[in-house]
Image (tube, rainbow, N blue to C red; front, side):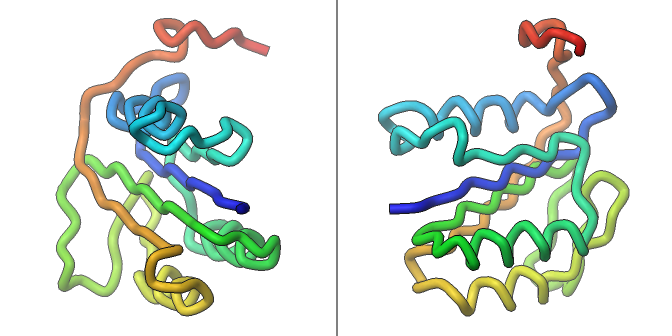
Length: 129
């Protein structure tokens, strides 16, 4: 079974939102489904609409059975709005809906979360390259 988790946040350079780190760790755990780290893609500083569409279409082209799309924004996202903002980029929900049609109802999950607490890359033990 091929599955991909796409985690998008909106943190400044050299930081991640704490909830993004927690979601990543949860997915790796037994409770989260023992995801492989290589199947989790992170965009901690946001993603633009075109690149999101490309990532979703590539995932579908790779015959993914499951997609988990997680957005952690600074402010709540309304279900009634046709667009939302993350990392300074406006994203149309239509991009998500178009890709969702390519998966069974149980194979595509979208989660919106809110979190402003940040953790630095230094605190996470990341090395500068």
